[in-house]
Image 1: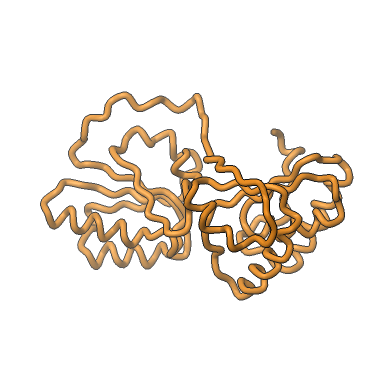
Image 2: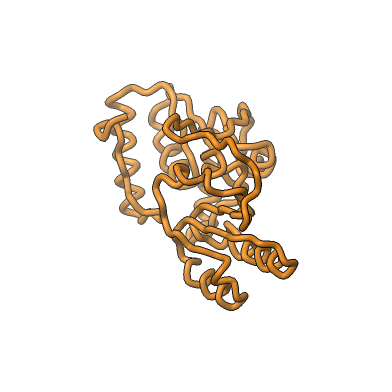
Length: 231
């Protein structure tokens, strides 16, 4: 798209009150300047900002793109959920990444709306397609994502432990960063899996090395299809 077409209200996951106000101002400025016909909002913070902005731009078609059944917790979670629900009358259409997500988020909306399941996708012609699906030894398992509790990487470690106990020759490679990093590494050590589990940190273009693995696994308890799965 080019850097001139991408605008950041804030570059952090948990936006401050000042960041929310700046994002609201920036969004209203862009909506007035460019006369957009449609606005797609993803996840709770952008939905909160976008729905308030949509009150001042009656002609814009507002879409909420839902990726999770549950909103992730913070100290303003109850207030955020309340505001999102009462502002849901301004949503014209809801997209979800799978049927399970669509069914799970229905109580978050007051009014009727059009529904559409739109699975996220990823196309990168520079990535070589996997052709050989014969199992390697060791059997290499890949898990990718932010290291949060809801991603359930600890359950993946339990899986590797059970497979190892059964004599299976397996390896687990975890790619990502987050607050669970140290706890997961401690659990790996406690389960005597240091020779079986490897933490690669955040890798921007991880899909270029995906062909090296035999299996991809995601155990997130709140996501539907998920971006990393699409990648």
